[in-house]
Length: 77
Image 1 (cartoon, rainbow, N blue to C red):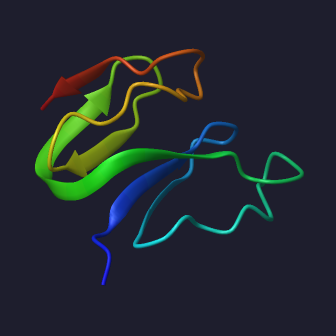
Image 2 (image 1 turned 90 degrees about the horizontal axis):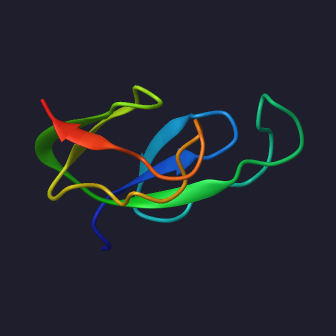
């Protein structure tokens, strides 16, 4: 079985943890979700200073795909 990964919709900011890419349908902002993989689920808590998303990750999450524009600015909390 694949490890669980963190996924974030670049459009609406919804966070999902799954062992495969979530479905793209039914984004509440209309049309489809635009999922970006942030990395493996883990025990270290990070927060993006721009969009305020919090994720538990093994390593610093991927920077691309911030709903607030361009790149995430992750800090460990």
